Amino acid sequence: MIKPDLLRAYITKASQLLGSVARHWFWLERTQWMGKEKLANVQRKQLKEILAYAYENVPFYHRAFDSAGVSPTDVDEPGAIRKVPRVERAQFRKVPLQDRTSTNLAPETCQRITTSGTTGTPVKFLLDSYAAAWR
Image (cartoon, rainbow, N blue to C red; front, side):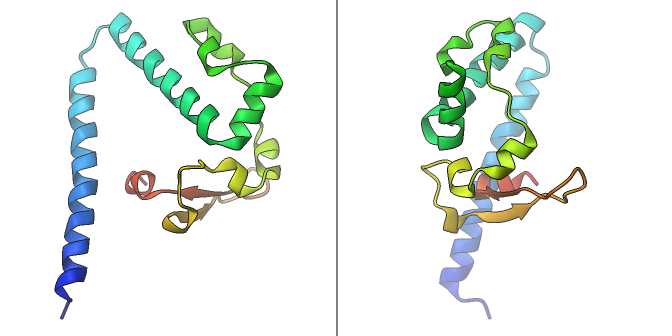
């Protein structure tokens, strides 16, 4: 028999994940009919948010931007994506996992994942519960 507290925890987690999936589903339903220009603006806004998050929360990306002399705010027009520092797989692999992980993420709550290594040496990374739900 499942303990009531454990069952409640499972139900809560399932509803959180389903809520997240539902939000994305509705977002996809809305965006699939957007015009090209509006969709490009939405994508540009999301890219800016992702770059800002990575710069502010992931030591590896903060250093990569700083060494390239670029700030996430410099990526303000379509062609500016070329300013984003390019990261090679080998370069990424050499960096300790903690430097490639968001500082506001608790590693003990994440799944440890390793790529298959078909293109060379496998890469280890962490998935939080949100990202894991999309696998």
